[in-house]
Length: 166
Image (cartoon, rainbow, N blue to C red):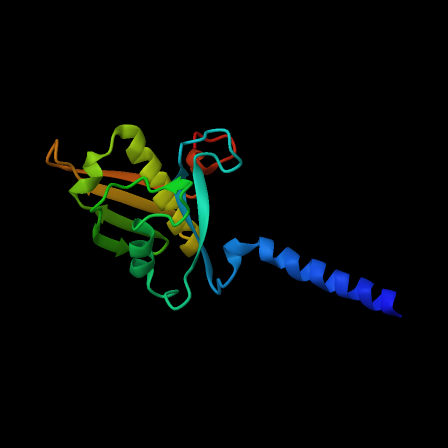
């Protein structure tokens, strides 16, 4: 009888400890993936350059702008880095039937061409995964040209495919 109790207790202990390994999802009630770049950037990883960080949207599921504000603060995981410069903000947001348009402040123009592509891809993947919209337009005011530059990213973009660039 004692050996049966020992075996049962061993299984209980084993299964309860296996739950401890999943610390990323511990305490998360409403999961949302915030996509960031690996630090350093690794191109041959499972997720490519874009890596999700699981965060909790509990209490903010209807407040997209608050979630974006949390996202722009950057990752918690020190193996990830935000593709955005400090001080980046969204100055305008519009929503159509199945698409969003975001306008970033001039801080976006401080990024190089590759950095802008990574920032757009991380941001679009985060928003598309959470909201299920089909396309996102990302604009910013350019300090260099003095004009607004806009890029549209669609859910079926090559950026997000298994054969994609990122």
